[in-house]
Image: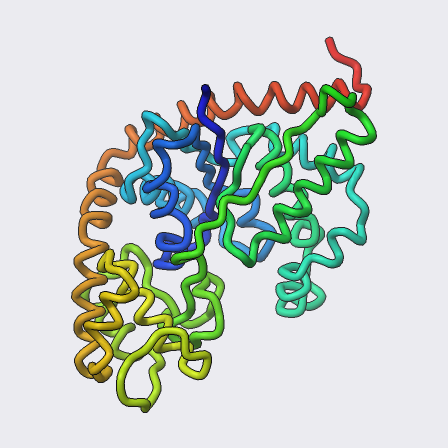
Amino acid sequence: MSKQRVLSGVQPTGNLHLGNYLGAIRNWVEEQNNYDNFFCVVDLHAITVPHDPLVLASNTLTTAALYLACGIDLECSTIFVQSHVSAHSELAWLLNCVTPLNWLERMIQFKEKAVKQGENVSVGLLDYPVLMAADILLYDADQVPVGEDQKQHLELTRDIAIRINDRFGKKKEPVLKLPKPLIRKQGARVMSLTDGTKKMSKSDPSELSRISLLDSPEEIKRKIKKCKTDPVKGLEFDNPERPECHNLLSLYQLLANKTKEEVQAECTEMGWGQFKPLLVDTTVAALEPIQSKYNELMAERTYLESVLEKGATQANEVAINTLNRVKKSLGFLSI
């Protein structure tokens, strides 16, 4: 029996952080041998908000290098850049033409980001869930690793696929495969260091809110030293009145590869003065091999570019078949 296919990706907007790693990439690595994997650097999504064209390409290469440095294995995974496969943009347009506008207007993340951008909000920001649907559907993905906050996007993807199949497919020959969410609860939502009620994000204006995978030991120490805590004695999980405490203990648990019970037993009697240095040392140790491998890869730009070139070729072979299938079902002339 062939392996099920998984599709996922990260935007190349700034350095990847612990939330990206613990919430997504490390899970990809741990489970990659079980699937046929397509991991994309979604650079087209990166321009749905104001971006700096002078760093987009370098950030894209950095993100690809971090995929490899974190342990993505090319024997079972394909790494490619979204804009290198033109079928993403073309399928997105076809899907646009069957997606009701009100489906997009109700998307929670659009509402939140649109408030921040005001009158500068772009059509791309409204429409990026359709591009995300195209990303997933192009590869006949069986499962898509998503966090709880992204389930709405996958539900939209399924709704669009169902609409295409109902309108243009045949009963026993659906045009598009319906993907399922692959949700891993542990580490699925890493929170900000400055506000334990908000998700760790690259868009947060404060660098102190996140630890990037390429932060130096000194930067990690500074950020953890300044991270938000509380005056309550003792450390504990799952107290809704202590979100920062829960978040920092969870980070330690994940980075130290310990169980919740082990961490609770170890840290219950600790104060922040004892715990923070422990978290610093654990974080530095966990990121050191990633940073070391990343530096090796960035010194071999030709190799990195060859990986992405091969990845684009492999991705295009799959994507073009899906695109042609959709175009045929919609009635386009083929030559």
